[in-house]
Length: 288
Image (cartoon, rainbow, N blue to C red; front, top):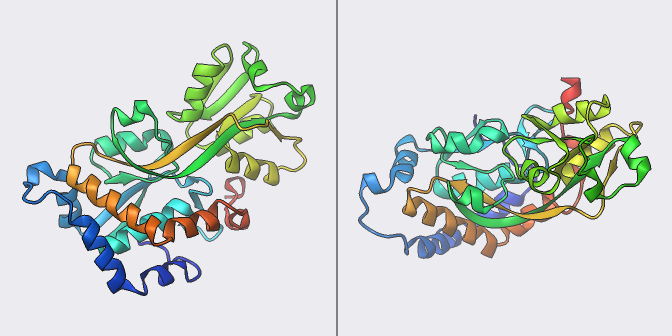
């Protein structure tokens, strides 16, 4: 898909002094190893030949990546990916893939990188390379009225009668496996599946990033949902890329460093993570 126009002047202001930016980026990219062969740079070579950057996203993880009421994919990671493609002078191709399948798609070469609120973990880092982190994300549990009224702690979810859902192949699912081994874990492909099961009483809690849980509460004000406090985890979020191309990794790292030094990443954090204005723009999957 073609990259959507970023609302406001954020990207315009960042790139209007393009000569200064290019100078900074060239000084950063200068440390890339010279003279590498095509075999040593499979990802970078493919990006150049296609003249496009393929970025995998779930479009189901607000405020990082989600579908707006207008039907476009928007969010923190979308605008960061747009900045990356613009800086590289490439077309951005957003490839929508369920979260649990993103790293598989990366390994298969169907995409060049993953930007979808992906937490950096040792397990994932053993399979792919990570650039960043570029921000942090907190997660917790969303509970039903029955559980909320009991005022139980997180530890008390570790019981055979407690049913918990989490996104498949996510750190939320890993948290349940490691910290609530007695609870029954059900993996889902999309968050709305878990929210609907929670509302129908089929499960007792959902583990996810806090913005997703807040959005579910706002959309279902009569359901008596509650978020367990304090957060159960705070995770570093990064860009996942194949681990077999040191030059591509260095290039992406240098661009991300440039975005941080010039204030773009900070502006995106303020725009998407430090206020809830994005909620009004989010499409409701139950109405589609």
